[in-house]
Image (cartoon, rainbow, N blue to C red; front, top):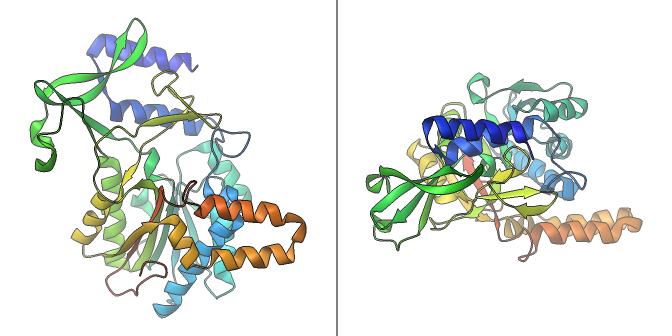
Length: 348
């Protein structure tokens, strides 16, 4: 247990009262990601780029295809939000290069531990603490895989007295979720005003801010973006907040800073934000359907023929990415494009 962070939260709550779920999640994840490499078998979770090279390769082909049909602009920036170990960028940029797309590389990353790993694979990259310092002189090709789910969320809970913000309180040195005292009915959409007692509604102002900034750049500079994450296509009630440690779900409030805190992404809200900024929403589709449309099955066959000793591993990776019972349905892919850019493959 990360006792110092737990003690910090306990002192803060004792002195000033309960804190929001968003505050708790932001501080916990900031410590978590800055202190370790959480990826892989030896870490806490595995993301799609670490499962199979096909994932990054198909993203690179998607980017190259839309770039070619946009007229092959001579200068273009590849931007990845939360690039992990740099594995996705390595595979995507390698595939894109075969078709003439060689962009400058930009990583938006705040973790010093992960930046060190990214530097080994991409010494030519430029790093940014946030989107504000990205260049504005050329189109951008933006990729964000399992980035939005780790951003802080707010939760509202329906009580007997009405809607309240769900907070983190203290009970005998244990962190627990509680209902706040402030009335929040005006912050809840009309469709959910009469939800039953105990219902929970999630929002993510942090994700909305990211989409607002990305969409503004696509509208002004041109380009395209892919957001890939687990989530839902329509607003939904219920808490999706979870903590994962050593590939197992654990108590969200037991050990702040020692587990990965995530929540499902509401893609319907994000699509609406993009469209409000005159950006083209290409669609939001299940990851399995999108990868199939891009040819993952043919790619798996080709890899297996080239390296028959790894056939079982190749097909296991393919299945994990596209199977409905694994990542194929829960994970979604949302595509965006600048006003004058073409449609992207896999969204028809």
